[in-house]
Image (cartoon, rainbow, N blue to C red; front, side, top):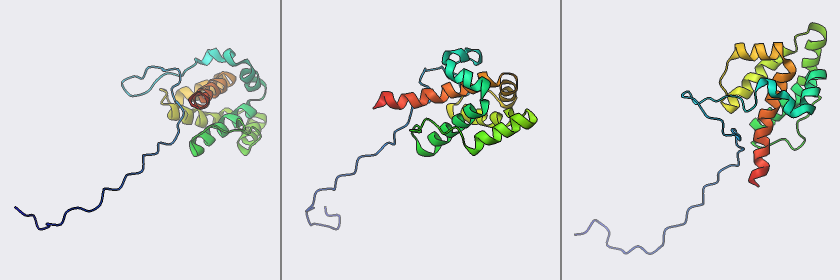
Length: 162
C-alpha cells in the first residue's frame, strides 16, 4: 500500500535547541505555607524587625533612605530578574520624595504604602491596602525593615544557587 511517496527518507531529523530557563530567585526562601488562595504570611513578623538591627535603626532615623533602597532593590529585581549588585541605590528620586513628604507634611508613609503593596504582590503575601496603611503609618520602621528582609530573602537565594 503506497501513500503517495515511495522515496526513502535521506536525512536525519535536526536536533532541537535545549530550552533555556531564565534564572529566578526563590520568592519564598523560608518555605512559608500558602493558603487556599495561594497567599502566605510574611517571612518575618512586623515586630521581629530587631532581627536586622542595622536596617531597623536606619529605618527609624532615616526612613527615606530605607524606603529608597527597598524600592530600588524591588524595581531592579522586577526589571532585571536578579539582585541589584549595588544593593540598591538609596539617594534616588523616590528617597527624596519620601524625605520631602516626611519633613514637610509628616506623610512619607503614603508612598511607602504603595511599595509595601508591590512587595506583597511579588511575594504573594496575604493582606491588603488597609493593613499596608496601618503598618506604614503606625510603625514605619518595622514595616520598612519587614519589607527589606523579604526582598533580602529572594536576593540571598541567588547566591545559594550559584
